[in-house]
Amino acid sequence: MSSRGTHGASELAVIERRLRTLQDAYYDHEKDDAVILEYLRTLAQARALAVREASAVFASPRLHLGCGDHRLEGWYNADILLGPAVDLLVDAPGGLPFPDDSLAFIHSEDLLEHVDLSGGTAILRECIRTLRPGGVMRVLTPDLRALVDRLYNRREPRHLGWCARHLSAEGPCESLNMHLRMDGEHRFVYDEEHLRALLEKTGFLVRAVRYNESPHPELRYLDLRDFGLNLFLEAVKPERAAV
Image 1 (cartoon, rainbow, N blue to C red):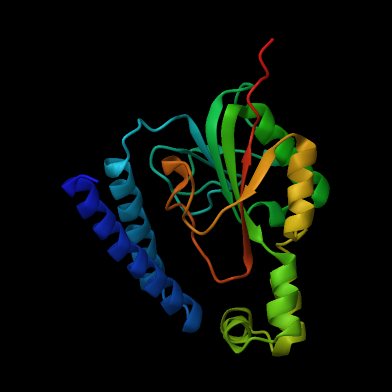
Image 2: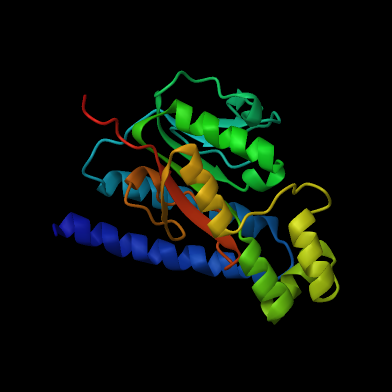
């Protein structure tokens, strides 16, 4: 590894530790907007360093689907509601405004659980339609199995404490219900088995990944949260077979 590469890896290691510290500060204490903003700035710093260190030219176009207030530079940032971070107004189950086989990457965090199962299925069909062969969709969404296990069965104090502070939930029953429903904002929560099967039925090849890690530099340092209650999957549109 070159001295520049070694230095870059060292910088990224420091940034990754800072990201984890900020995650813990958010999750274990009262909500602090300054912590959230610093996390977003640090995440952007990690992306910029990863871009600088990557030897390959980043593929595009890239779609950030369900962006909310989280803007990714170099991406089309799309959401159903207009906001400062939004480039495109999109009702994803109704269709994506891109031609077939046109997108290199799609990143979607905390979107699928906000639509019902039929809507989620429609979104995945649009994603595989618009991705080019070999294109990748990164999907992050709450994990039903982890929620039931860690909140309700194991009743882990850390997660129950977050629910008490942020959701005003008392005890495991309320905590689980609030996580699943989020005051009616959540419509369908997946476990890995079900989501993987749905992605594969849609035509994707699916692999599990970890927080902020990916074989593709374009998909690193995008993730907003990792508290042990989420799924991290990457779905690849197969290359076309040679005729």
